[in-house]
Image 1 (spheres, rainbow, N blue to C red):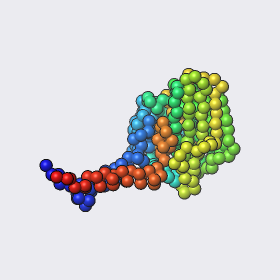
Image 2: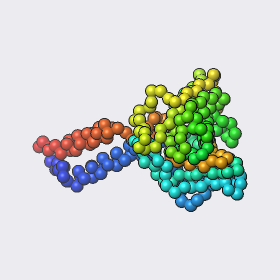
Image 3: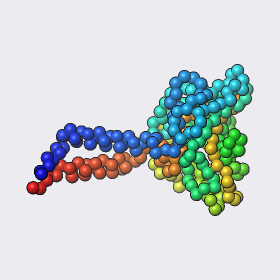
Image 4: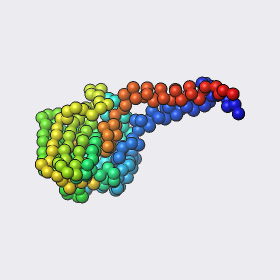
Length: 286
C-alpha cells in the first residue's frame, strides 16, 4: 500500500505546531515541581485554603492574635525577577501590629525535606516586606525548626540549619519583591548543608538559568541529622506587613526556582519537531 505523505501546510502540520506550543508551555509550567503554591484563591481569608500541589493539609493561621491581625489573600501577584515563570493567582499578606501572625501548611512526600537522606532539594518563594522583617521556616511538626530564614528590619538575612546560623549584611530592601532561593543537601552518612541567595524583582535583576557557582549564605551541620521538614511556616510579626507568593520545592534548580529555559532549549525542541515533520513528509517508495 502506498501511503499519502503529509503536506507541510496540511492540517496535520497545524496540529504539530500546536503540539510544539504546548511543549514550550509545559517546559515552563509548574508540573515538574514537587510542591507549588501560587495562592490562586478568591475571597479574603487564607484559613482552610487548599490549592496548589504537593501538600498534605490546607492553610491554617493564628490570625486571631488581636483584632487587627490578618492572614489575607491579596489582589494580584508579587513581581518576580526577569526570566522567571510568570506568577499565577494572587498573593497573601500577613499583618499584626500587636503580635505575630503565622500561616502553616503540611508538606507531602516526596517534597518532604529529609536532612538524613541522600537527597537534594531546591526551594523558592517570593516575599515583600515593608518596615520590618519576615520569617520563613521549614519545621518538623509544630515546633522543631529544621531550616529558617529570618530577615531583620535592616535587611540582613540569617539562615539557620537546625542550630547552625549564618548571617549576611544588608541584602533586602523594603517595598521590593525578592525571590528567596535555597538549596538543601541531605546525607545518610555525613552532615547536611544548606545554601541561600536572593534575586530582586524585574527589571532590576534576572534569574539565572543555571545554579550559581557561589551562594550568599552556606551552613553545614557538624554531624549527621535525622531531622526532616514536613511543614512550612510563614510569618508576619509585630508591626510588620509581609506578603508571600509563588512557593516551590523541586529536585533541580529549574524545578525549584521556576526559571524560564534559555532560547537554545526551545530551539532544540523546535528542531526535533521540524525533523519529525520532514520525516513524515518523505514520499514512500513503491
